[in-house]
Length: 127
Image 1 (cartoon, helix red, strand yellow):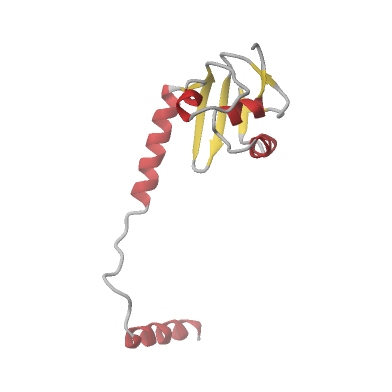
Image 2 (cartoon, helix red, strand yellow):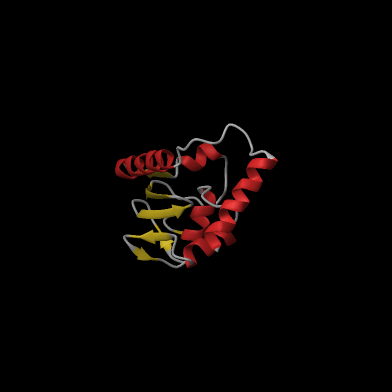
């Protein structure tokens, strides 16, 4: 196998559950090849670098093997390799997100009296 469509490969590599979801991600610009948007029908080969954005993360992956058949997760991970810089960036961004969301939660919910005081305080600000 020399070439495979991008949407089929992304589905086979288990980045997306269906080919339709892979196609939608490609059309929305979440998949890039060498910084350029690509089409779902583009044929890819071994050695191509892809940028895959999903959720909070963006991965830069290198295509190692081609497949148009969806198999187990272990076999799917053998189709690509994430670059070292991409892994480092993802870990750094995850640590930043984690540090931003550290705040103290109240020990318990406000009582009825405290809620009334909160409402009165907010009404005073509006007047």
